[in-house]
Length: 236
Image (cartoon, rainbow, N blue to C red; front, side, top):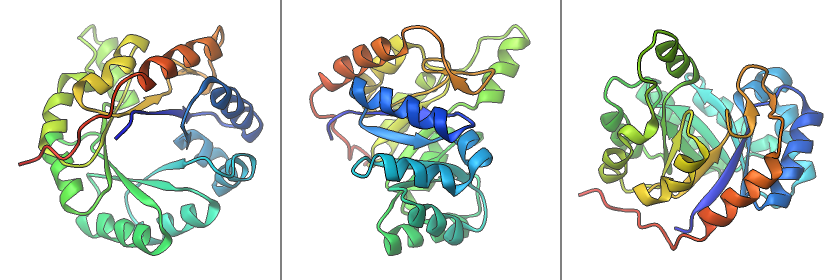
């Protein structure tokens, strides 16, 4: 598939989310994500607002579903999401329920392997249970906690090639990537490039980062979009 750039709107007000999304679309971003902080703060109203403002744009609702899978996916789909997120550490019946809701409401399911003891096995499990995409994710607290103890901060790039090789579905790498690392994700076989904290979102305040964010986004989009199609379907 052709590389896709997604911005994670980990922001806590609808007005700021819409302003940041408008700026991101000008810069060439392909997908918008209603980030977890936005959904916690504004519920499905945040998703609805994005859908009203951007009627033709794919919208990922990152609720990180752990239970109540069908209902949560149904609510997000009715609010206007095109993609929903379920966690690999949820019960397999929850994942199956999200996948069933995805089929019923014509939304795609992104499975997130955050905090799996075996990240590669977690990715395979998500694919086997019917997810359309895998999010290979090193969490916010994990990264910051390990770094605070003076240890090397883990990166999704550490196992990204292994995850990509383990599944047939497209993979997205998430978690503290630098601009240079985000741009290189397609080189690892991961065509879905997500931009959030700390690249475009202030990781401490959950608001749009200061500085030349639009210029950085435009440069990232141009470089990511310059890649040729990324081969998926490599699992044996």
